[in-house]
Structures are given as C-alpha cells and as structure tokens.
Image 1 (cartoon, rainbow, N blue to C red):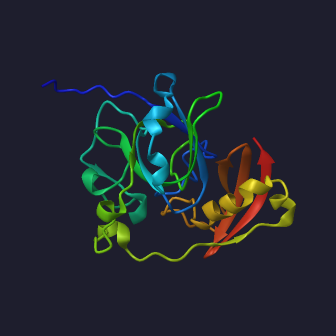
Image 2: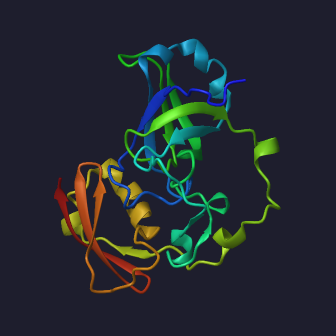
Length: 228
C-alpha cells in the first residue's frame, strides 16, 4: 500500500469572506450563503444523484493559506485567548500536519445545469472564498449527531453575541441581501480573543466591502463601510 494517497480538488466554494479575519470560528454559527462550484472533471450531475434528500452535508477541505512544510505538536487556540498551548489534535487549528478542515453546512439548493455545471448552494460555511474542497459527504443525523458529547475547553462558557450598532449611514452602503449575514458575523465578535481595547478600530473585509468597527464591553459599533 502506498504511504501517500493523492487527493484531488473536486470543487471550490465561494463566500463573502475574502480574508481570514471575520470568518465564523465554526460552521453553522452564522447562516451565511456559499456556492460550491465543481472543477471541470467533476461537473457530472450523476455524482449528485440523491443528494437532494439531505438537509446538511459535510465538506472536507484544505486550509489553503495555512499549508506548511513543518508542524508543531501544540498550538494556541483563540478560544483560550491565544495565551495557552494545547495539543494540535485537541483543537481545530488550521496549523496541522495536514492542513485539512471539516465543516457541516446546510444544503439550501442544487442547480444541476448551468454554465458551470452542477452547483451546490449552502449556508453556514466557515470557509474562505475560493477554498479548495476535497470531498462532499451527506450528514447523517442518526449517527453524526451526539447530543451527550462533551466539548472540552472549547465548550467553556462564553458571553452571548455582541449587540451590533449599525448606523443607517453605513448600513445603507451594504447590499440588502448581505445585511443580515453581516450583522450576524459582527455579533459573533470577529476580534481575536486576546484583544479588548475599546478605542481600537478593527477592519474586516466582507465581499466587496471593508467594514470598520469598535467594540466596548458587549457592544460593537460600526464606524464606516467602504468599497474595497
């Protein structure tokens, strides 16, 4: 048996997240839309036969901006403020021996024919725009869901979502179809867990926009929105 098994990129996902900063920390936290476009060799509608019966799917993908030649057995999870080292296999850090990610997303639609071949529409993805996908599998609730599972340090109690103050002056610059998603992303607090300066202005890319905001206690205030 060969030691290395080659993996093919079968598709790429397109989202409004063009930079790492601001991406939800886990899939399903924000119902942001995404579009999965298959690579030419895999644009075969037969490969999706029966997928319409599932509400959710698993995506196996690559942390394409975190590929490294070396790896470390410990990482600093943002969930712990970036100050505590944990074993890499006890985290979902992108800095792994193999830069592979796993996400469960809602399947919202399937388009079997079009200029790009079959296309999948999903919601709740925590993937950067253009992320390569290695495989797609159906989510099986009777075996994939474990209500009694424990969550380790990642399940430590956390304060609720931030209150987002979005002045109409800036909200009006956001396309209507993106407003709800952007609000939800901001409410999840995009900042690194170790940054708490109330005077600091943060910058986040979202689609074709650049959003500036401040955070004081549990309130996030949008300062400006401009085109990128």
